[in-house]
Length: 455
Ligand SMILES: Nc1ncnc2c1ncn2[C@@H]1O[C@H](COP(=O)(O)OP(=O)(O)OP(=O)(O)O)[C@@H](O)[C@H]1O
Ligand SMILES: [Mg+2]
Image 1 (cartoon, protein in one colour):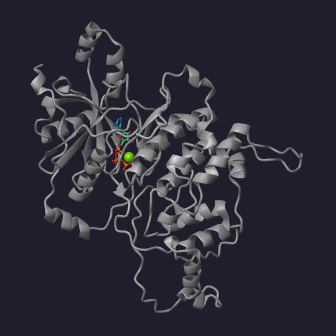
Image 2 (cartoon, helix red, strand yellow; image 1 turned 90 degrees about the vertical axis):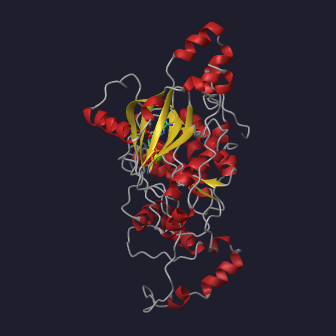
Image 3 (tube, protein in one colour; image 1 turned 180 degrees about the vertical axis):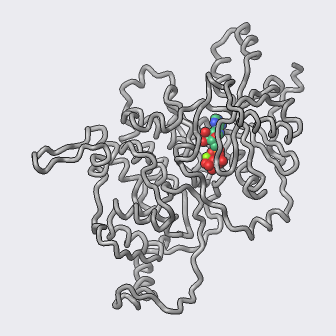
């Protein structure tokens, strides 16, 4: 291959025409990402070639409709079907014509291999993931995803964008293919030391994303492709991600405590408080609008409460839901029908008092007439013991407790599932938390050392 042909695949020139952008502004946000139970999230490896007839038909249709894709990629299988895209595993037929800075595994291998081995290696297949973004996605949304992926390049724990193509109204993003295991295969028996590695990897990714002032908005197991064999994961799916401060309007949560309480005491709510369950008859205040993008069960309280100044801490809450899922062995842990339902699910745990405080923080009022919610909720310790059938037996006097390492995990969990976003731990601080800095007993034997230095 002539050296002059070696080049990185360019993704710089993503230009959108302005009419499309304006059209998008008027559009209502399509904000519900896939139900975690309905998503695939499966790695296909040895059985790649045995594909179902319907998948083969789908691939054939895609190849036919996307002119020229066959000459660049050999589509192998369908590996994911999300709300906004279908993802295929493919062999990169033009791999050797480009500089492949994104291929960390290959670079590692090259470092240690002989020239002969390298030559043989250059002939072995190289895989990519082709994300076919549904044509119903607005141009602005597609542009946003590609642009953010491009801006986030340079971290081993965030999926880089190799290149992107458009044919008519169809856009595809080409990403490195990451071998990973389906969360549903390991959430029931992942040990606490392994959880430390999982979250070290996830927060290394989030620290990078947040340092670029970007909110992922859709942190959930299917968007973090974790490979337990390497104790390493990669964050994908920036389809709902946004830059910090996009469309911000002041929310009460950013006011000082004094000003906030002044506003509360002079609010419409305060005037109706002496008559419980009364609401203004002709309320002419406009309803509040805020970005609610995310996935059911993973949305932070402030997203559900329509905070208009959401920040990167919404991702930390979602990561907390993953930790709660792993500790309780229940997936999905929260399973609500809508935002109100979701708030009530969180209230069951944190209690009425905390939820009222949290709502007021964002200038909202939380009232419920469901008598079973306690004022102070339940501790995570108790919930995890219940979920794992280790409840204490009052009759026999046997008191069940969490294991020591589970207790450490729960301490960390409280920092993540903190209702006040200003008090919630950040990704940077999380990486310094004793739960994550504590050495994993087996880590000396592992090749993979996590990079705890900012990337
Ligand atoms: N680079 C990759 N390597 C391997 N598998 C991938 C890769 N990217 C995506 N996948 C698989 O495809 C699935 C869907 O991808 P992605 O989350 O990007 O799509 P989506 O349509 O935006 O999904 P969602 O429903 O979460 O919005 C992932 O959960 C994963 O199983
Ligand atoms: Mg996804």
